[in-house]
Image 1 (cartoon, rainbow, N blue to C red):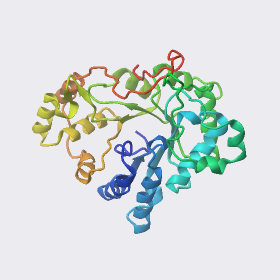
Image 2: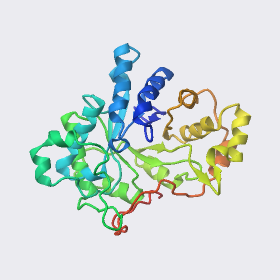
Image 3: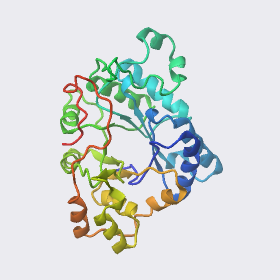
Image 4: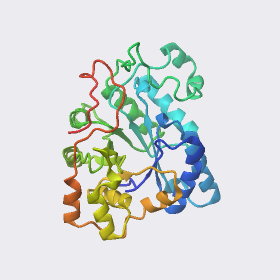
Length: 320
């Protein structure tokens, strides 16, 4: 998994009022990988927690691996650097360790081009969430006219200018990732593909493809959702394996990903859960355990999203 820490803290759905303390607890618990995004609308508070622990002397900036993501309304090449700087400004960091294209499709930009070119500062200070999902009269997302191959060229420029150390993608399926890897003149390969992944959606084929092309996989939402009214965390198979190892169901689900050579980023703002979720390096699942967990696959797509009417051109399916 290279230089990306195997377990990180996802800041998705962490409310701004609680995520600062969650980051502090995580640093003390041993986390060095923090997964952020503009779309989470809490980067300012995440940055506050990071700065507090650095100032306290608990950790150095160079010990941390901080990731953020480019939102869909900023796929135009002229907007990528501005969007990255906006996240850096919110986090109060000089560079990101990893910057990802959040989704493979672009949305209509929130501002006219002339406003963007005339006032980067106003864009950086604009309120998050106001124009994140441009919708038409039918409440369908309005697509942009961008191609992620062009967006990627602007992402590569971020590495060259030193704003980010690594770049990657998120929610790319097999065809999209292959198209990027085969791009003529590719200067930097994506280091990871961050995808929804858990025993109800194992992503076996997509993971195999990524790893065969030397692209790591990062699993978000590793504790899953529910299937037929049963939460993954309460699934009898997971419960039984947890009892056999004297571990929590969450620890089993996280360890499952580690043994697949998948980076895993569980999210929580509860101190006890944050601490528990990184205590997964003192045991190992048997092959029988792994096979039983893999057998739970329902090929579900649990993270839903408004989609454009022209969905064939903007596929949201991230399975293989």
